[in-house]
Length: 339
Ligand code: FAD
Ligand code: NAP
Image (cartoon, rainbow, N blue to C red):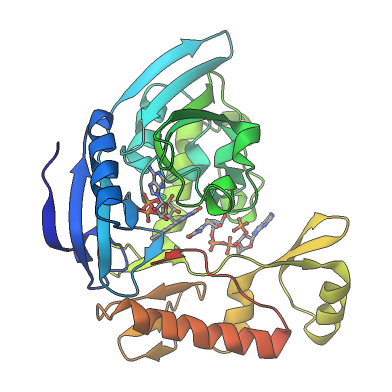
């Protein structure tokens, strides 16, 4: 059994740097240790918090349960054919380090997802996405432990019910499965996806025929560094709200009132609206409430430079939510999980 710690400071383990403590904490580096910890939690009626890089959660207060910090490591090429390679990666591996590893080995497909913080095991939870690519585009399957039955499970792509920043693991599967590994299906030949506007703009000096996946990754890193606060210096959890997807009728009505509304078609009856635009237009960009602020470069990001409590961050988020609901009739949904 790995070591059990009590009354542990979780501030270094969440990128929003909110001060909160865990009643019990264990870092798990071997999947064989998991059943014992699950029994311990069950025997003591403790709620569980599965922790990866802590970059997509908000701790409202101290956690009166057991935090299992996923420290499972390892990457293995399990199969290949002429076009693809299948790579199985343990849940505790750092996401961006995985991207770098695939680039070094010329396994292509993850380049647009460069520099996303967090762990491999958390990536399927919200089907991470950026610059026109989502996890589901390179996903083959995952392995997980069923926290109710103790069974080891395998999920393929259809089982995961991936959607826009969404999956089974945010709904029926919420708090039910501990993901232990993810298997990716990557390409041996480049399949560049550079239609996302800011990426195309960043790469415009290089003729498309000469572009490589490494250059795409570097361009994504440059854009991200110029726009997004580095959590190591300015604590944040990335986008605080999901981009709302609304019905066409509501969209057309809104567009009359707000002709500059930034939006993207989803299907014949739905439109995705840029939440950052709504928040900026409602006057929130750069605003602050004590030690919590709306980032001055991207209004979708809340920052916590003063290391305020989670409840203070959530209070600002709630104020913004009310403001957007009354201004545009749109209910913003927070993206990070709140504990
Ligand atoms: P955590 O915050 O540790 O956990 C998040 C949730 O997943 C929790 O509910 C946790 O219990 C659960 N979980 C974690 N690991 C497991 C596991 N092994 N099994 C079961 N449940 C688990 N997201 C994007 O989609 N696209 C982006 O471009 C993006 N950019 C970001 C930029 C910044 C600066 C920041 C701070 C965040 C960004 N994010 C982005 C959000 C975040 O990085 C991702 O959602 C990431 O996948 C979270 O990983 P994590 O390991 O930190 O998860
Ligand atoms: P941006 O380029 O300023 O664009 C604003 C929003 O418009 C994005 O959220 C994006 O939606 C949407 N968008 C832009 N072009 C689009 C297109 N051609 N088709 C469909 N939707 C389009 O966004 P940004 O803030 O700099 O972020 C860049 C990328 O990184 C985005 O993909 C964003 O999701 C991702 N990111 C995510 C987080 C997070 O925490 N979740 C944090 C930082 C960045 P999408 O979000 O659907 O792409």
